[in-house]
Length: 243
Image (cartoon, rainbow, N blue to C red; front, side, top):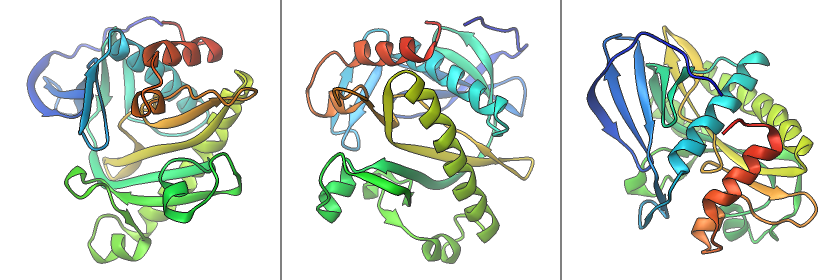
């Protein structure tokens, strides 16, 4: 995947997350995301450094964001700078996470006693508050409205866009003989318009091999299955991401 000259210069560090660092640029409406090799789970309680992870996730995210843009989904992605950095629009992020589930896994199984792997038809949609200190608790539309985290219109837009993204990505991964089990999306505002932000990589979704149900996502790290980056690279190859 080629890089582009976006005529931006990296300036001060604005924010250091669990796996990415955000930098200001000389353009007030543009940021640089640096994908580090850091890996974390359980709200930062489990940490590791994995060689090549930042590069794989940066290029994976670029590929997916461009596929979504081609399908009519507005995203903040503008282009790759190098192996571990990309340029994005500066969004005012909404403090909610949108989770769509096509199959039961993770916290849904623990909360509801559902057997892992049960197909969900139609897919379920859930909101979570983006706050690591609180463990990213589940919230509902009433909470979002009452506390002003987003407007009713933005809530409806997020739901529609999330379900559309889900269908697009299900088809992409199915073509690589994989099942998109669930995924997390985050949104922000750019000049008042709702835009998909953050990243899409195996860090923020669950992907299983269609035939064997082998886990090819961050559950390999959470569950000490090993070969985390190798699994990410396998996913990338299957859907045609140039690494």
